[in-house]
Length: 126
View (tube, rainbow, N blue to C red):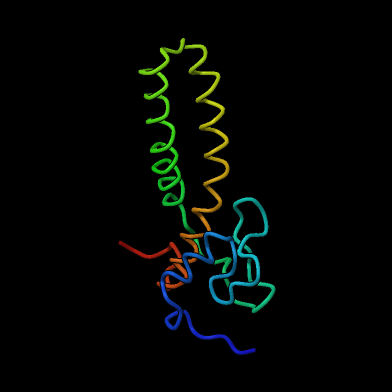
């Protein structure tokens, strides 16, 4: 089955595929071989992915998203229930850690898909 070039696939499609941690080209193969390690190539279509380096953008997006979830909830809990500092720490630190670990690979998949669509590798000169 022939696949199209990266320019023939919409940005929305490659980002959605990335959010599912799937190959941006075919949407079937896995784009990761581990938790955050990009696969060298898609096993379904053979598209090379291992050269893409997402670097700092996925953690930035993860912090942005998780921060916008945890901070309002913690402020709401403080204003409404006047929790002790120990209770805040017992609730928000583990919640933040779990959310960060859940969101980070999803964001990295989306960034890898976007970079693939744009033809970027992460080694571009400024």
